[in-house]
Length: 251
Image (cartoon, rainbow, N blue to C red; front, side):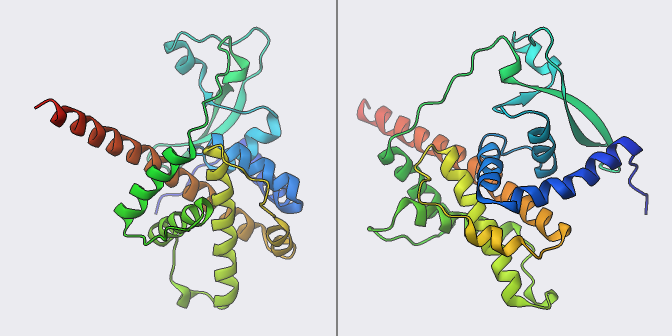
């Protein structure tokens, strides 16, 4: 089996993410800040989200200088690149890559308009129907989000409880990951997050090893990424169905 190649600088950065993960779970504000960033950088690996947050407070959308240039966007003078780690060569080698946040460019940051509650509920309804998830008429938006995230978890999380010595602890960890992802997607949809409490998450993390903490952050990122991708897919499905209905009216 071929060994993964990692140079000293990358090893140092990867090692630093152990402490960054601990810091994330240290208190409610740190966890909320991480998940808020994740809600915008949902398709970025959790390790790179940790590294990016250490380098810059304001993060919205990252890309390479070359990628921005193809869109006619230029990096502001004096802005320093942000370092991330990328896998190359069939994922058997790591390399450092340089990116910038859109706040470092001459492009003004446009805040996406919040969708209406009716629109979001309609999209969530379609997502639940496609996934075979039962919902109730009086169910809250948060309940629907959690059901969808749990379904995503069931399709992506290593769920062989027999491999875990403490099934109760395993289930608690999974619930922590689901809660984090639900908060992140709630922020992504620009819904109210005032009633979210992270005391349980921070208390759970106090005696956990680095590996466990990083694993949980990894799955929070995965669940969030899959949810946002599925939400966008459902938007396309609904748009096509509405277009078809409009066309049928004129036949």
